[in-house]
Image (cartoon, rainbow over all chains, first blue to last red; front, top):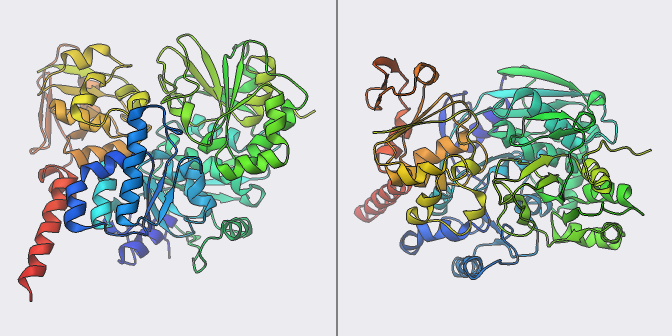
Length: 418
Length: 168
């Protein structure tokens, strides 16, 4: 009794049974996520892999998404090296360029299940908490070590409980909810903590939970998790996740560092202004900000529901003159479904450019890079200075609905469905 | 020894811009871009033995390790901050870079103060005033003292192999 989600998962995965916050435990993650950075990761331990072998063919998951299609000879060579590594060692879970963003692939292909432990050399690995996994980010060096040993250490975190009450009122969305929380508790409000969402979560779709969990790291969280319910079961069945998983739920009397409550009905469309994610204000108060580039998509908001909401607003309208709208679907599957149901056609008619499913502009590596003095309104998860490739540009974050409505106006506006 | 003082929420894009993350991986490639968008003078003037002081949530954001690899390779003696973001903290252990969480020392610092750090003793001196900070758990010190995580893991794998060979 009195155990949090983090205590239960880490207790089970360490084989220790009961563990306490602050304790350091050795664990064997079920999966290790890597993306384009698998190339530098593998190159750290090339000789060691030849000597000791790859610890597991099943645990590593590699998704090429960050710079796709390759932007240069250098990135193309990285991709080539990764494919060679995958072939040489028989890595089972490999998704080549064009399949989608790693954080969508891992859940949509059923690799993340409730109670599983997943580490990834990407900070947004926390996304898989949406399906009840304990998922957290690590660096490249640690990923390289896990390729050799299959294990790592984790400090059992204290936990923060966030209780959600009621229902969101569109156009307010899950993105507005998570930005509101980050604005309130700060970019380090959950530093080192396991964040557990509780309460009336049934009204939140899996897509919405993924958006919220994805941004756990933006409040500093180690992981962010939703309880498993019928929606989780439906999603996992669709994702053809292997059966046999067991939901892990915190005890009713578990001890939390803090508990906070949010009334979903009171959430309004908000904007995270430059240059930190906790610089949040209601969209209605962020006026007269002229926008040059709009970005709809990414691992935060590039799922079918996100594109559909935007298409609903943009239908029959045009992106404002002088502005550009970039659409970045989360996966090939999302792109395919959005093509079949006319969503992509609506967006393109409105003037959007559709990019292949990957990370592209979000991290400023290539595609949609900003110029000095330009402003971008994006559905991504970070607005740090220089994030989109230019330190003299400004990034504002918002929901798909706000981005779509603002794209028509050419400046930030509050969305409405009337 | 020079002291570099920065504020709160110094994120990973400030420490190492994202646009270089898929083209720069070696210390030689990383070091010229360290802190590029925060303080362009750092990469030019910082030297081994320098200390970085900062506010809360240092290293927040991406899991990219170029910041910890770069600062360690440069020979930065320690980063002292009011608090660190967790992936960065972990990455520093993996690289053998010394991080010290000591809010009192940061509050006490005035421009021109000399800063002396003694991680073994758990002691930091700022302008003649002494502050204490808790030592790391032994599991973590073992990784740092091995010279970082990969050195630690190689030692462990080698020991295991030797044991397996030793027992028929």
